[in-house]
Image 1 (spheres, rainbow, N blue to C red):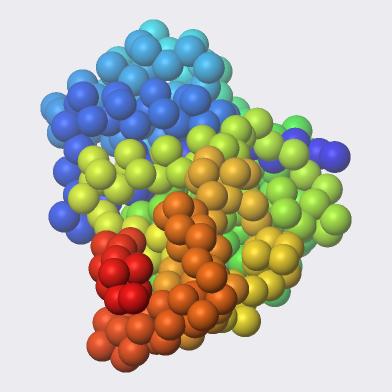
Image 2: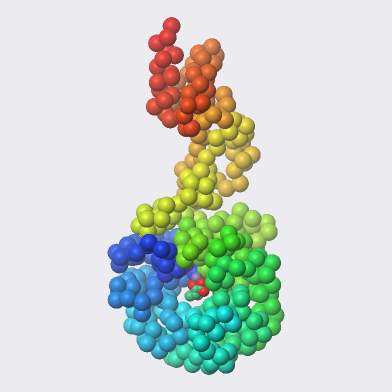
Length: 385
Ligand code: KIV
Ligand code: ZN
């Protein structure tokens, strides 16, 4: 089993979600939970972006002992210097420098020629390596870059001292097949690529961030980047909890391990949602309110006989106490009986049938029948002699 490094960027790319703004204490609280969750690297922020972010990154770097802490920098000496000041007390300081490599970004945003981009990347990676023991270099918009140009620039930044090469799908444009092919090509064609960590970083604009990340792992990525609950720029980043659970549940197909403590997933997700104000959609994989809820009678009957009929993930695996059989209009007698027994009632067959019929009538008026509704039905049945 090969080990995959988990790079969490909830506090940097995740915080770039429109409307999210975490203060220093909130950042620190999330960082401590990420440490308990077992991430290998946490990107605490972008120190040059504001005084507040600088302080937040510094506080996290000085507190976290069981993960490497990193901060983002543009390919500029001043950004690298700010980052060093914020990160120098960390147990394992790490810098994350990015520079775009796609024709669109080089022409319109950077207004630099490809040769100037190579020179800037090499100069800044070599400058950063003087202080930082680990330097990650990201080829921003890698998935829309020319592959021959990518090979050339990656070789040069490795020679300049980069220890991690990240190939982001910055705009969430690529497909699993294409992104996997990119990693395979880089693995097979870049000189010295085996001396560095190769990282995947995906955005979810076409809803493929997790699938793309896993395709990268199957083709040679040894680090994956993502956020809790998939928060991030625009449609967000790859969701780390989904990647972690997919690798675990499909270990028959994916022979990889991570250091993650999976039963910390729910707690981490709840904390990030609470402090960022980003609500987790009910149907979100792994952590959504409905991820372990069953409403239809056929599914409820199956789950009551054996949970594995409709659950591929046990709730306990991700830190959720139990599944939830929701009583609604598709529910059947088996789930209804089970529920009223949980509430402490045991009814004779005829009373049970009567109660079930009242419940069914109610479901035509109400989407979800609550415990209070059931108590009312049961009280009516018992007083109705
Ligand atoms: O998506 C992206 O390209 C980024 C870079 C800063 C690595 O977040
Ligand atoms: Zn990103």
